[in-house]
Length: 428
Image 1: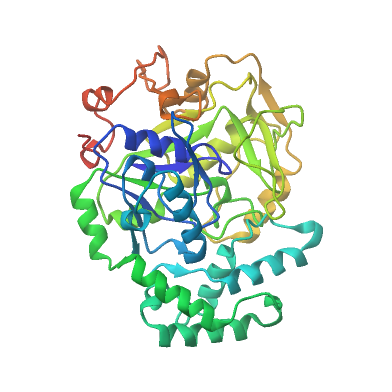
Image 2: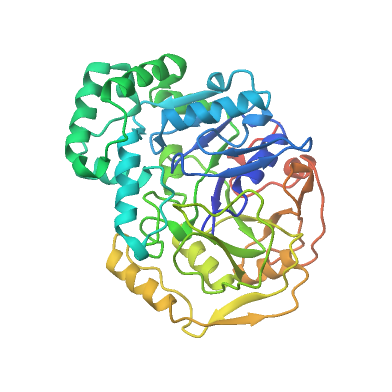
C-alpha cells in the first residue's frame, strides 16, 4: 500500500501508517520522498508520542524502516530522532533501519545555506522547514556528480573532497557557525558504522517478503511539479517515486485527508478561516515554516490533487471528531487545470489565480465519509476520530460513492474484502 497526502501535508499519514502496521503482517515501511523536514505524528494508547521524520511511522509497532534512494538523509537529525525513540522504549532504533547508499546526504552546510536563502526572501518567504532539503536537491541538480550521498560516508576520503567543494560553492551563505569539515567527517564515519547501508537489491528482497507500506511525506499540493509554485517542496509527493521503486508491481493507492484543509506556512489556502480555532497539539508555528493555518474542506483543491497524482484507490479521512460542518465544493473560477509537468511558469500563474478565487460552500455536513466520497468520487475506506490507532475504524460502503456507511474495526475486514491491487497487500 502507498500512503500519500492529498493536501498540503499534515493530514495524518503517520497515524494511518501506524494503524496499518498495528494490524499485523507488515514487513517494512519504505520512505520514498522528503527528508528530515517530515513530521508524522504517532500517539500510542498509553500516551507515548513521537514525531517521525526519517524513521517510518511503524517503528513503535516493531516494523523496520527502509530509506530509499529518493530520500534526503540527515545523519545528525537521525541521531536525535533515534535517541527519542530509545527514550520511548525502542532499544535498538538503528537496528530497525536500512538506507540506500544512493540517497542524498543533507549536511549542516546545506541547512545553513537554505536558511540564509529563505531569510533573503524577506516578506516573500516560500515556507521552508529550515532542514536544508531544498538546498540538497538544488545542489544535486546543479552538481550531480559531486553531490554528497549516504554511501560516501563509507569513503571518508571522497566525502571529504565533496564536502570541501560543497562549502566552496555555497560560499558566503554558510556564515560562521557551521562545523569544520573534519568534525562532519568523523560523525559521518560513525554513522556509517552504526547504520546498515544497502544496495538496490535490498529493496527487491523487501518487496518479495511483503506486504510493505510506502509512507509518503508532505502532500500532493506541495509537489515540486504540480504544487502551487513557488510555495512547494523540492520533492515528488505523488505516487511516482513509489511506483518507480515497485518496478511494475501493483499496489493500493491510499490518499489521506482531514475533514478540513490545513496548511503549515505561506501559500494559497482558498478556504482559510481564522475563526476555525481547532486544536493542533503537534504542529506548532515555527520560525521557518511559519504559522499553522486552517481552512474548510476544499474539495476543489483535493480533486486537483487527485488528478495530479493520477487518482487513488481508497481514502483515509482523519479528524472526524473535529467540530466542522462546511465544505467548499466549487470556486467562482471553476475547477483547477493540471498543467504539464515541469511548467513552473504555468504553476506560478495558477498560484496567482488561486489568490483571486472565491469558495462556494455546502453547509451542515455531518456525515463526512459520505460527503467526501461523493465530492471526490472515491470511497472513504478508513476513518479516524482521534490520534491513536484505537480511534481508527474501517468504513465499509455499499457503493463506491459512500452510501450506507457504517464502521467495522480490525484486520478481518482486510481479509474478507479484497481491495484494488490486493495481491500486493497480503495481510497476515
